[in-house]
Image (tube, rainbow, N blue to C red; front, side, top):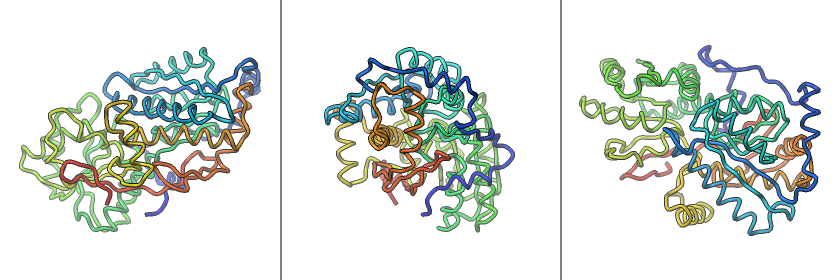
Length: 396
């Protein structure tokens, strides 16, 4: 499968509102001065902050990220740290709320944060990137997929972007002849979901299947999907594409079964976590496919060690959000060592050094090999397609 490229963002439909990209080099003079003055002359540790939801509806994502960062930090510190210096790590809960995420960022700044691994979800990340841009602070998000979440050149991401997930999903369905008629159920109130839908619909025009139904819901109407499913069924859709999160996907699968409607299901990385939904009949997801950079069932040595260590430390199996976050910390280490960072550098000087160094490294991690970045902040790596078989995630 072709590597994801940010150039695909040109296919965004008008439903996606993409902010103008503004380079750090064009920051106001006041912002640059502020970053340069924030030194840590007496510091002897690197202070890395994290932000994400550990309470609320998206807590599974934030908790996974928080724990994975901790695991990576502990490993790196035990192995001598970054350039011989230890890492201090602090994580703040934002409850998947933009305002609370900004408050969390300010709290971490007061603590002395020098680099941010976060935030976890797109809307809060889009709010926080405005602040890291103003402060010229290096930011690497493990899992915020919206285009706007990394719109400035101080910000990078480990995961795939929304537009590219939509494009690659349509290509995979078409090139593998998985369906003839596809219905889409998406959340029009969520930038992740609507962004994927927009580019999926555009790319579907180039594929052999037909989109016969596209029905939206919102955050205020995300429990009853019988209307959307009935329209898909009436249109003869043999597949339902769901660019949504696993909580709603579980409801859709359950309600489709009660209607006697049994289409194939295809989704993106938001489906990760489906098998952990309480009281969900996993047999209803049998055969469902989704794009993801990681599965804990992989048998390579790196994944086996990560999964084993994560289970031992936190008592649960890591998901792809955890894998992306774990990789983020090791990317920070690699770029910081490439740049020769020291803890007494200013936040702004660190950012300038890091955003150059990250474009010079090639990273082999849990979520891909030979991962690289250019100035737009997008990773170049190949996606993995996961299929649910016998109640487990399996790489196709």
